[in-house]
Image 1 (cartoon, protein in one colour):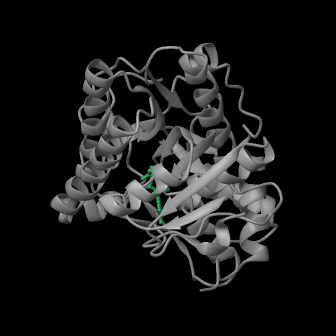
Image 2 (spheres, helix red, strand yellow):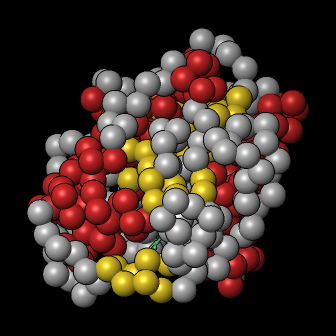
Amino acid sequence: MAILVCGGAGYIGSHMVAQLLEKGEEVVVLDNFQKGHHDSLLGGKLYSGDLRDDAILHKVFTENNIDAVIDFAADSLVGESVTEPLKYFENNIGSTINLLKAMRDYKVKKIVFSSTAATYGEPDNIPILEDDRTFPTNPYGESKLAVEKILKWCDNAYGIKYTALRYFNAAGAHISGKIGEDHRPESHLIPLILQVALGQREKIMIFGDDYDTEDGTCVRDYVHVTDLANAHLLAVERLRRGEDSVICNLGNGKGFSVKEVIETTRKVTGLKIKAEMAPRRAGDPAVLIASSDKAKNILGWAPKYDSLQTIIETAWQWHKGHPDGYVK
Ligand code: UDP
């Protein structure tokens, strides 16, 4: 029985594939390579195609004995989602609907879905609990929340059991140094700071120092990509045991400010790393920290790389070894 990883050539998807292969699982990957990288795939049977294409889905589901699906395939640039909402609703919701149709038709009853802390929007409480109010402040978060609701009704109608995992700030790279983060364009804090460390960027801009936080900069909960992948594996195993659908946060329950992240990166790299203040970035909540008690209790999840220093060390190892990312 195989596990189908949709979007398996992306940042988190490729770490998922690595983890599944390490566990001896049979892996099938479907990716349209709009953002994914061939070199990020350490193995598995690859199908190149889009989830909105019925023909490729038919091929994947007829040629393989798929037992469970892990779905990472989505557009994920928050800023772009604000200027191009229809692209996000069409792709992120449309492709998952197509996937669910295929799962219904081929009687595949287990899915782990890549959701996001952006489903909460500006939080009412810290740490954020799964049953807190969801009020996304951008179309990206809205599209993921919509899929969570679609999953609920597909469970009700077709018995497709799901686990939706709401990630906080995915960061770090595989411990082997072979795979890591390569977004184009890059918009995430840690890889951008590391580009400064590599001399590819003159300075890191700190988006706002007038937030209601200790040092005035935004606080986020950074979680290692391998720990995220591991949570998906535990979620698949739990669904295989016949357990019910669930939504879980994935974070470390610890928050670090932008300034703390820059300071830790200076320590890890031993380099100066120039930083400069800039205005706030639209739509950034001041503080996002997860309660991951539910994931720990229900999935038995225990993050291994939970210190910011380790997260940055693994990211640095990847960026140093691949200063141009996955060379096309
Ligand atoms: N950030 C920053 N400078 C940058 C990129 C990001 O100050 O060049 C801040 C951003 O405002 C946020 C935090 O770093 O508070 C993490 O941003 P990122 O885009 O990595 O993840 P997000 O929290 O938006 O998912």
